[in-house]
Image (cartoon, rainbow, N blue to C red; front, side, top):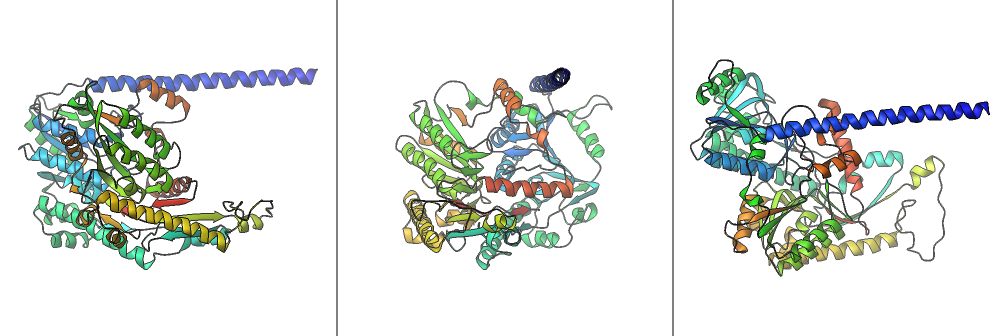
Length: 602
């Protein structure tokens, strides 16, 4: 009895301590959210003074879809993630806002996942160019700038580099990790079936280096994209491609004086010196004042988009951003069932006059891509479907794009990759090495084909290859039909090969060079809506109650999950990326339309 009472008392004490900790945690989280909400409300009501600069801190991740949470960061007063359409809209509105006299760019991008891709940055840069053409200046302050940063900042009328700052403009690298040696060492078997000699997604699992075909297509793609970057920078800085290439190959890090000599920047100065100039330009009243300014995130929140009205006919913008997976997916993937269901609702909604499918995806499950494409084909019969390609719209991403009434892409969009593969893993040797064996019974020779306990037999491989061949044939036929091209021609440019947006337009895979704004404008024209329409977005931004429910349930704001920086951060990112890639292998038939996504933008 004594032992029972002692145990009961111990359990009650433990339960009490747990309850107190849970309450403290809940109150802490609730307090953080309330504090965040208060800062959000305060920033939302910020007053924009006359003669102000719009300050665009590039230290954000720019995504196509609205951020899932409308919270500011846990620390600081700026947004951690911004939506591309909001950024470009705000810059264009600032161009006609009499209170805004210029734009200041500073900081370095913080890309995550598919965010801040080159296709998206082309749209940001185009909006800044439009702003500059009004006669208002764009200025940039650089501390450390890599290719991605400098590409956007090069649009500025005046570029100022910190005396101890550097520019890194080495070009583009296409690097891949190869796991075949690791799998062999640990006894993980891999078997693949594929169609398309350039369909190299499976190579990291089966090889220790690039195949000649993979090397050829990656080099061609990087050359195309680098040519676009060099061309845009050269036109802005009045430099020839040869001059930029020479600078690129001169040093790993281009120091301040060298950057000025090579005309990459206009002057070398400290940030406080630039601030002094901006104080005078904006009419700051005392020496203690900083210059008159409004952060871009605050300006976005205080300026409503006329297209975001709550009633009237609308254009639906569907953001297909992430890997395409079977089923519902999550906030970072494109679930075939979820997106097909939403497209069906939009097709049946008479208030939706057109749909813009914004694709930023390297592909994924072939069956999930077909679920989405089927709804697009049905929707085209009753209303226009326009496709806007972001940084990636390849393989499965192209599968869901092929039937668009018109396809828009940026020059640096990565698209194509019309090819299919199957990949199968087995753990027979790994299990055997630790003493695990498998046994079973079956009623037919193919009953256990999908097991991971053994390699596939030659007959099973032949059957799977037959299915892969059929899916590839369907892919080619769909592209030919959707794009009104001859099947033989599609076959010649398919084979899993990836193309830049510029090349894709020449080949007929893309209709027009342009961003999301151009695609929305074209959709409005096709639907005969003029300029009087609202925008309906999917996935939609969650309101406070929805965000709070997710926060308390399973999802945390991105800032709470931020990785460490430096070497450890890079290792974490690569490991996390690889684990995420393994999660997408959920196609019920084990057949995928995916492109390799290992291009590093230095």
